[in-house]
Amino acid sequence: MWWQYTLVFLGALLFDIVPFPFPPAFTIMMFFQILYGLDIWAVIIIGVAGSILGRYILLLYAPLLAKRYLKESKNNDIQFLGAKMKENKWKGQAVILAYSLLPLPTTPLFLWAGISRLKPIYIIPAFIIGKFNSDTVALHLGKYASENIEGLIQNTFSLESIASLILSFLLLFCLLFIDWRKLIQAKKLVINYKIWK
Image (cartoon, rainbow, N blue to C red):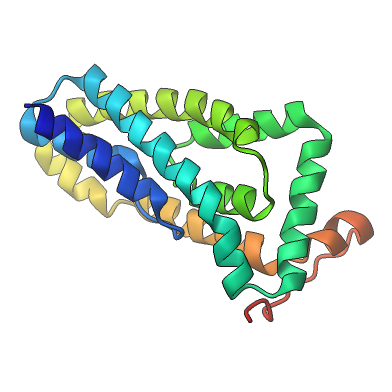
């Protein structure tokens, strides 16, 4: 039975290590919990641990991706945004916590934090609190929904799940293509598509 919980950990890790919007890790956690009838609290704890490790690794390698694929000016722009966020640590923590509480992929948040070279201690604690709470709610709702599997299948392509994916891509677009320095300093919205090397 331990191997089933290992699948939960590895699934959550793999879902949260990728640098592009992917379904939230709770979806794979929910899948294994329903498939194998696993203890829901063990799935939550083990799955959240996998998610945290995945996001931590993403934080570490995001600067390498940015250096390889983004122009230096875009890297500097994202780092400027990170520096602004660090100026008021409590507001930054509140934003990270609020975003982590939503059932949205946190990939854009961790790419930004990694490229900004934020220290993991700045982002991980708020993420743990938000992730544990949002995944707990999602898994309990999933357990309830598994009793009505037809509704769950219909909701896979529901307006909410499609909207969540679109919002994630929109946030990633904003992170990459908005000139944050000009927006914050000059209060001017500038979109720059020439960010790739």
